[in-house]
Image (cartoon, rainbow, N blue to C red):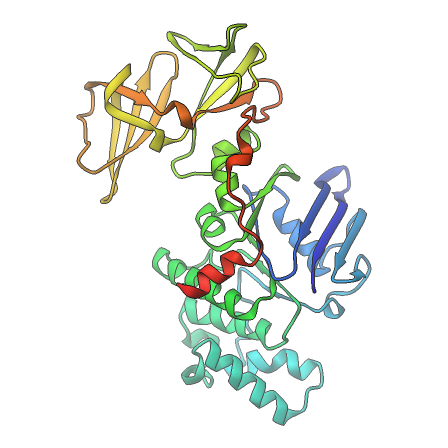
Length: 373
C-alpha cells in the first residue's frame, strides 16, 4: 500500500508563501489531479513530493516513510516532466534503459525490462531512433517509458500533455487512463487543464493562491463546488454567478430579478450572497427573464449563447444546435431552480444543504470503469 500524505505542509520562499498548511491524503492506487491556475502552488507541491523542494514545515509521507529529508532517488517515485527531458544523443532504447543503468541493473535484465515497457507503450519499432526523429506524442511515450521501467510505487506527472496539440492530447489522455487502470499505481498529476482533470482523475485537488480549495471526485467538484472560486473555475463555460442580497423572507434579489429560496435546501441567513447557475441550467425561448442576445457561438454539437440581463448581468447559456437566436434580439429565458447554487457574500463558501445527494465513487471504481471501456 502506497498512500501519499501531506500533513500541514507549508513551503516558503523568503517572505513569499507558495503553499499554505496543505493537508492532502492520496490513497494507494488513486489517480489524483492537482488542478488550479498558474501560480496556485500545484507544481511546488509536486516538486516537494519528488524531493526537488523541501517543505518549510509539515510532513510528507510516501507509504510508511516520512520523506521530508529523503533525496529524490530514494523515494521510490518516478517523475514525468512537461519538457520530457530526454537525452538527445541517446536512442529511445537507451533513454528508457538509463534509470536501470544508473541503478546497476545487469545488461541482460535491462534488455528484457526495456522490451516489456516498449511493447506496452507501442515503441518497439522506434527503439533505434533518437528524440529529434520522434513526434511530440512519441517523445511523451518515451518519457513515460523511462518512468515505467523503474517500477516505482508513485508516479508524479507535471503537465505532461501541455506541449501536444489538441488531437494528440485527447489520444494521450486515453492512453494514460488505460495505463493507470493496468498498473493500479498511485499517480499524482499536475495540470491547469480542467478537461484533463475531469476526465482522468479519481479525485481532483483544486488549489488557489497556495491553498487547497476542495478535494473531491469530478462529480463533486462540478455539482457541489465548495466555494465561489471552485464554482467559477470548474466548468467550460464557467458557472454564471450574480451578486445580490437575501432578505428575511429567503428571497434573493439582484436588480429587478428576484427568486424565493427554500430554507430546507439553502442556508438562508439574510445578507450579501451570490447565486450561481451552470450554463446548461438556462433555457431560451420561454421564461420570466428578458435578455438581449450579445454573442452566439456555434460549436457544432451545441451553441454557446451570451445574454445580457437586468439584475443578473451577463449570462452564458448552453443550448441545443437548433436553438440559435439572432444577435441583438430580445429573448425570454427560464432557469432550473433545482440547479441553483448559493455562496456566502463574505467568504464565498457554499450555502447549499444538499451536498450529500452527490454520489461518491469509491477509490478504484473509476479505474474499473476505465478498464472496461
